[in-house]
Amino acid sequence: MRIGIIGSGVVGQTIGAKLVERGEDVVLGTRSPGSLNDKRGFGQSLDDWLKATGSRARLGTFADAATHGEIVINATSGTVSLEALRLAGEQNLRGKILIDISNPLDFSKGRPPTLTVCNTDSVGEQIQRAFPDAKVVKTLNTTNVNIMVDPGQVAGGNHDLFVSGNDAAAKARVTELLRQWFGWRTVIDLGDITTARGTEMLLPIWLRLWGALGSPMFNFKIAR
Amino acid sequence: MRIGIIGSGVVGQTIGAKLVERGEDVVLGTRSPGSLNDKRGFGQSLDDWLKATGSRARLGTFADAATHGEIVINATSGTVSLEALRLAGEQNLRGKILIDISNPLDFSKGRPPTLTVCNTDSVGEQIQRAFPDAKVVKTLNTTNVNIMVDPGQVAGGNHDLFVSGNDAAAKARVTELLRQWFGWRTVIDLGDITTARGTEMLLPIWLRLWGALGSPMFNFKIAR
Image 1 (cartoon, chains in turn green, blue):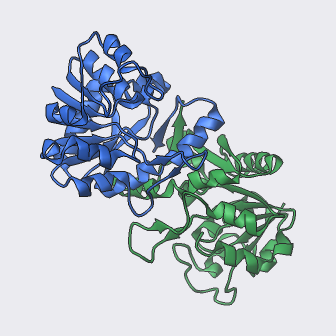
Image 2: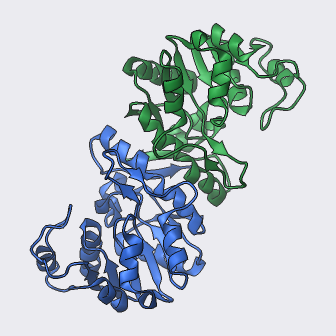
Image 3: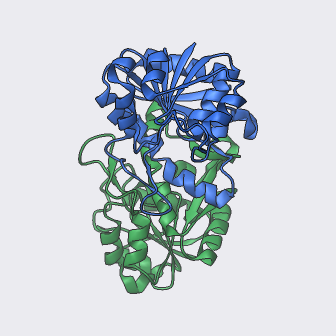
C-alpha cells in the first residue's frame, strides 16, 4: 500500500521503517529534504534512515508524501501539525484516511511541557476542522514510539491503544492496519474525534510516569 | 484511627462506610447536616447511610470532620473543594495528612464535562497552596468509587493507583493505608503535587471509556 508520512523525526522514521519492513510503499515527507546528513531530533539523519530501510523508501516534501499516500500519517509535533498539513496540501488529503499521532506538547516554557490545546479542544479536532474532507483517525499518540510499532516489547503486548474519529469505517480500517502492521491486539474505539482530547490529555501523566518509572517502556492498559 | 471526611456525596459515603467497616472512627462532614432524609447526588440519604454503618459513624459539619480527623479526606467535587476546605478550617488541617480525591469536573456546560483547572495547575496544587501546613496527598481520583474501596472487583485487583504530593512520608503513609483499608497492591508515586495535573487530566478519557465500554467498572493499569 502507498503510505505518505508527514514528519521525519523519530516517530515518522520509526513508523516509516516498520512499514517498509512490512513491504509497504513509503514516502517520508520532510520539511527540508536537502539536509540529509543532519540528525533529526531524537531520530537519525535521513541519510542513515534511508540506508537502514535498504533504500526501499523514498524521501520527499510534505506534499510529495501526501500525494503518494493512499493513507497519510501525521507524525509531526502537534504544535506544528496544522502548518505541516497545509504544506502537505488539502487537495492531497481529500477523501483519505489521515492517521494523526501528534501531541501538542509545548517545551518552550520548560519541563514538564504543557499542552498548547486541551480540555475544550484537541489537535485531532483542529485537524479535522481544517481538513473536513480527510478522515482523521487519532491513534498511537499515547505510547512510546518503540512500543507503537512493537507492542510485544511490553507485558507481552497485553495493553491497549485507542482510536478517535468521526468515520466509523476509517476507524475500523485503521484498527485492522494497527493489528497487521504492528501487532496491536486491543484497540478501543472511544468515539468521535472530540475523544482525542482524552488521549492527548494522557500526555501529562505519561511524562510523569516516565520519570517515576525511569523508563518510557510502559503503556496504559484498561483493566476490566 | 480518627478520620474526618469532607463531603457527604457518594464518594464520601462509600469511603466512609468502608472505613467504618474496617473499624476506623469516622466523622462524615456535610455542608447541610440538617437534611438527613434528602438523597445526596449519586449517594443515599445521610439517614440511610448512618443506618447502613450500623450507626458506628457520626455526621457533622466540615469543621467537625476536620477537627475530628487525624487524617482528613477531601471527597468534595473539585469545583467546590477550596470553599469546602475553608469551611473545614485551615487550623483544623494544620500538620495533618489531607487525602485529596477531588476532580474539577464542570458539568454546567453540558456533557462531557470539562475541567475547571488543568494543564498548568490542578485542584491538588490549589489546595496545597491554600493550605500550606497540610500534607496534601492526591490519590484515588482516577477510578470509580466502588473500585476505590475494593480494587479486587476489577481484573483481580491487577491495576494501579497513583499518589502525588510534596511530603514523602505522607505519601508512604497513605500508600500503606490504601493497602490496609482497601487492598491496593500497586500505588505509583508520581512525584510532587504538580503531578496531580496528570491524574486529574485522566478524567476526560476516563469518562469516554465509561461510554465506550458501557460500564465504569474499569481502571488504568500501567503495563511494563
